[in-house]
Image 1 (cartoon, helix red, strand yellow):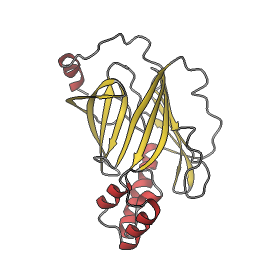
Image 2: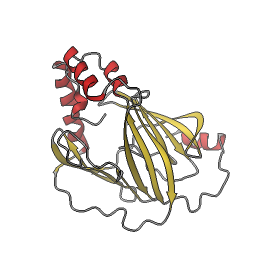
Image 3: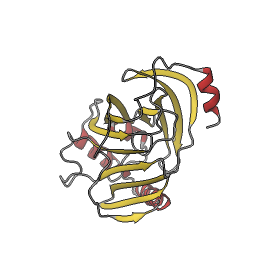
Length: 246
């Protein structure tokens, strides 16, 4: 975060007022490129590779999902878009709600993991971002590049954030940059989450969730479940991402 002050002085690309751009909804398209992922998972057995090919095919178009992010200066809620009627192998709708309260520095995520529903409840732990001197346009906004590493899944994460939307929210479990994250790239294109539409409006009931039951765990416990499962899958020459979100 030490580079932020220098870069904000070095690169000034705000062409309009930031007032009124601190609350609203972002609509993202999340695309998973299974052909890329299978190529990267070199330990998979031939049977596992065939299983992926039969399930997802060999198309490079990827598997698409609609996601939404409600945000303001104090909180955010990331979840599946209403277009996603059913998810998962069972045909039931997946539990997936990621909430962050920036005012209280607290995070509560409700998600399905390996057949169980968990409530991951902990203080906010921002990724260790490195902001780079690169910009591009996403959804009509000039965005700056930042990178970090998921040390549990061993993935490189690239984010593009809009300084003109001065909130620290973002998709998936990523946040903590001096601007809204409008694009996320996981592991050099294995998964992309790209904003297609941004609506600035006063939010009312968007942050209200009905009560969700699940086993309460911390971030550390959540990471251990993932790390242990990946380790077991590698030993068994299996694809861990049948049960994990990539």
